[in-house]
Length: 351
Image 1 (cartoon, rainbow, N blue to C red):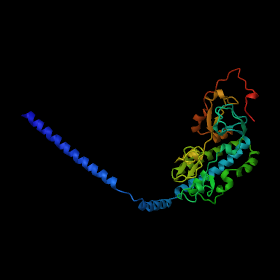
Image 2 (cartoon, rainbow, N blue to C red):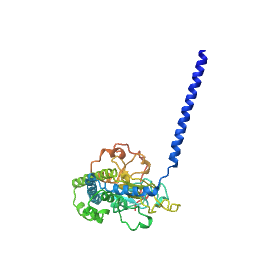
Image 3 (cartoon, rainbow, N blue to C red):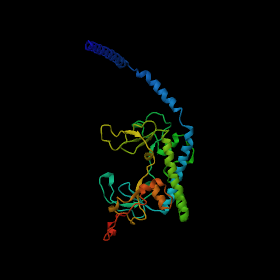
């Protein structure tokens, strides 16, 4: 008798659960079907979207970020001026066929040259005299009248000026366009070279050390300021080339040389830009006290690296921040040199 009652209760419980699952399935099917049949009228949404974009532009520039933008422009001007002075006292060399740069008089023997248009691999460098643009890499972008203007088409690429990306970022952040830091002479840094050449000829080592410390401080202030501005103001960079666009969306100018023969004809693929995209660090080989006078290819695993500005300032006696010490391998071992290893003039790739 007890077994029969248990079977009856179990059967009723299964029927109850079955009815509950059926009701739930009908409810879900009705909900999804209603969502699928709902049509969105894009013609009615377009004016709302455009109005929202126009209202968003009223929030910019952010008043709290205007002092940061002015500080970035001032640090950029001081950085160009300081590097120009240091280059008069400390020579640099640049490879003739690749972007490699070395802070020193003779260069190194490390075979990392990729050749013109990256057609070669692991070749010796051919060194020439370096300039300011080899240390401070210029990144240009289109200058916009306002941040939320229409997207630049390919046919309009010559209607807009090209200025440094840092200047454009500060311009959109509310920096005064009438400031002398925004003049074309200071955009590329050439105006400070003539004045710096006269100052560097009469400097003592102590004065040069002060200039190096001030230049390194300007470098850190510039990068930290750009990092703060990128948290508020959007910027884009191409995934396949170094093209940068300061704005909420990239432009449509087909300038990407990687895929210019593909079906999309050189269109950029945009992603969020970082501080290294607007202010490239330009990593170079760093020569330490325990290293040989000329860095050899056999010891490339022992040598350290550093941004070009940091390495230049360290050669002038500046105090290097602790965050670069690991990269520079200050206290690391040097490469073992064999006794019969002699470097002759024919082994050096200098011009």
